[in-house]
View 1 (tube, one colour):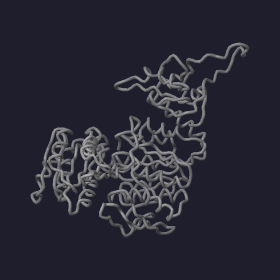
View 2 (tube, one colour):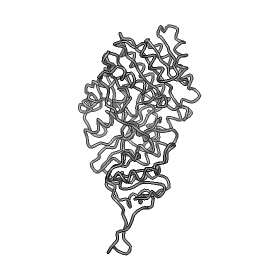
View 3 (cartoon, one colour):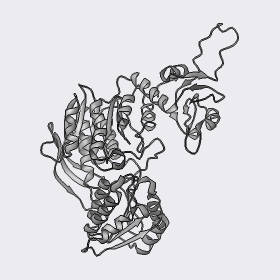
View 4 (spheres, helix red, strand yellow):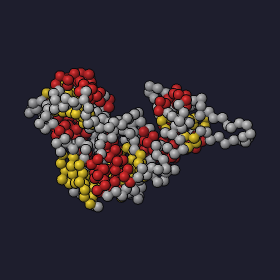
Length: 491
């Protein structure tokens, strides 16, 4: 973050200084009180506070951040962004959440060299954000969020990490309704906007795919003339957003019409994509370390952004070939000491991403036994039971050895699997994470492959963690990046 005195923070947020004492002695009769200077990060957890930081005191469901303000100040925080006096240096505002956004917008206005790159979509936002950050870093200092910091808390916290050296801000933008992305784009006006897809994630909160498309199109609308909107040529609802922007439109996808596309696509024995990256400037080979055919679309979107910031196709392809998972619990592939392969894709789930993960599992397991351990896909609305049943059918048609369905809300998956008469695999329904671990421990043998996936509310990552602990082996797990409440289980 750029250094700012508390007085400037008060101006940017419309707040009032509190807890400051004017200089004494021979100071002027009406001294200008600027307060301490914030030089460190803005934090929402008092345990993360340190010298020069700003602690934003949020009122949560379980705790009130104001109660921890003293601890943050004792740890060296320069001040507190608060809704009431806290007995120390503070900027007091009506709403900390809104003030955090105002502060981020004010800081960004002081960084004219920073280009904001916004990313949205029903699936793949975080993985694509990570790839984009890796690519554009080749063209200048880049700031991107850890995990899924994609809401009205996480996005401004990411913006506030930027400083004078920052050239690219890669921001994930999620939504739970109409107007959410427009609000985030108001905090960080994008120069480049990427719309990945319009799927069924959280469809219950939008009333249908048209509602999701309307929400996603807010990013395209926010990019001004002179900017670049990058759209998925393979998704008609996304491609239609070209009519809703004055910016240059660049398309990506497998379609021959796409400006940035893949040719000669295939998967190796581990399910890792290989393809030729085709751009108007030339072609270059890509051999990804990420798993699954769905990673290709994410890579093409990242390539289109790299092209927009002036990188040649050869350099973009090199970065895409080097990239590993940067956010936790997303297609992390680990081989245990006993030869069992665990695919931890437990960060979140919706029908599209779950089908894609099952396809990866089936490809990886050719000649091996495979088990899908699936929890509920939350917020699907009235069609939830039908969507879960379709996933069960997809698992059965994939020909894998076993399906473990975890939790009552996911039960229709088992019903769907049973409807596929040709399937010879085993389906087991359990109540909770502990029971799932027991079922697996009784069945897994060396060389088996197991996929673990579900929405955040299902806590499926605990199953993957137990499987790896029980295996007690060093593997090839992807690097984990801590998430937090600033993230969002958002569409």
